[in-house]
Image 1 (spheres, helix red, strand yellow):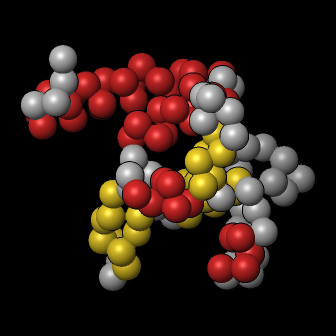
Image 2: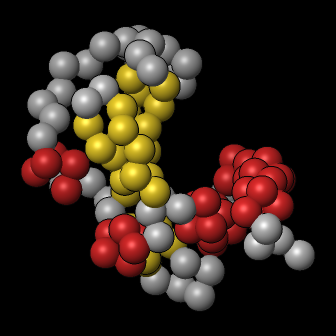
Length: 111
């Protein structure tokens, strides 16, 4: 049955536009380059969602395929995963903490 297994690689022709992305609070898109999560906001440990404007202030811009893409800051990603408390999110935290520690050590902002 198509799409029944999480590791299936079936291609689904789905119209992708700004309106499509805006209609989802959270969506994951599988591309030939890997998965990409699109969210309208991220959960905060204090409750509620950090919206796009708030996340954008702390985002990082990268260039890829002729586009400039804003990527959520590492601290926001960590906070969202801590707030969600799902097993896959909690399992990712040690690696994210290591990345944050390495970033802070490199920039001289770590303890």
